[in-house]
Image (tube, rainbow, N blue to C red):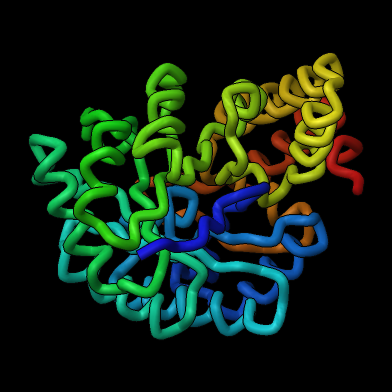
Length: 306
């Protein structure tokens, strides 16, 4: 089965919105989607790392996917549903629902508590999930810094292409750029390999990336649109300048605690996605004020003008 490959261009990984008491806040999704579209982002990779997926119950993940696909219907916004879970039964349920909801694609990380010990075992796990949504493109989500699964993603693509009919590619969130090049050429170069490190996007573009999935695209998309445009017209000085702005921005966010700081930035831009869930931390009002001050010193609010 040949599938389309939707992970081209800039794809945001949205935050899961919560109310002040920590419960799921589905009402904010419409505002999140509108914000993405207003900033030229036409795809959302929901329920992933930025979406605090492993801090959500299964019913919350199902409700989140339902709301995002409802909001996106009739708009240019494509929704990719992350279905990965330590429980393959839960992952299959999420994949089945994504197909029923007519999502653009599904993706899954490797199980990370009982880890697959070989590429063959990893292919077995991903085949189990992908088979629950055979009509949708399936992406393996490579993110070893979180899963601890240190298996070759390029070998996965070679073997997975033979066993997973709807395998479309993978989301590559690793700084191993040698392996990224191997992934781009795996299975005869027929698969889609979206890049997942915002602060290294320019390097991936130089190697042949056609799409990127990232968290800072929620609130800093204009920086990356300019970066991509500069790269495409051969203006490497400008592309490097925009990439370094990304690096500076991410340094500030990490210093304040990335998840809580990123959610605070969304609130500053009028899209209040609420607090982060433990074990991630949230910013106090004073900390959010300090973050705003640091962002103003950077020039961040000027950088993101459309």
